[in-house]
Image (cartoon, rainbow, N blue to C red; front, side, top):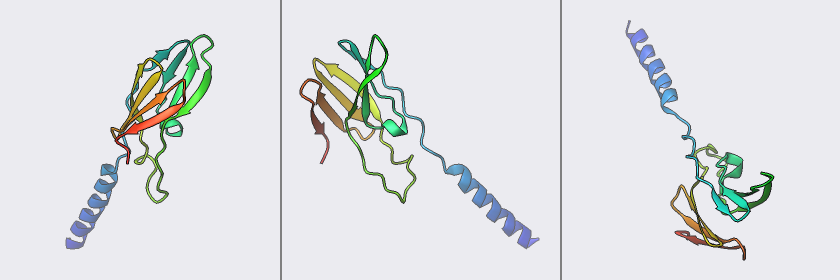
Length: 121
């Protein structure tokens, strides 16, 4: 009887550990901003993390992809827990401000293609 109780506790512990191991939640949708004839958006898909898409408002074609940031990925860890997505886009004149999940803020001058980061080392 004691063996079955111990075995049952081990199985329960292993199954509970599997249930507690959860993937990250989906990133929140980021409101796009309009820049002249273009819409700037953050698709927030793993392949596009840290990127802003510039889409033509007329033809709805992607005209430019702006890589704002890229974090290194440790191959020994699960990729999904390392993804850092954009949380906010703000446009003031020709400058777009991008905030990521680590609360780092990047500004990009869309005319001059100059990038700056606030909160980066």
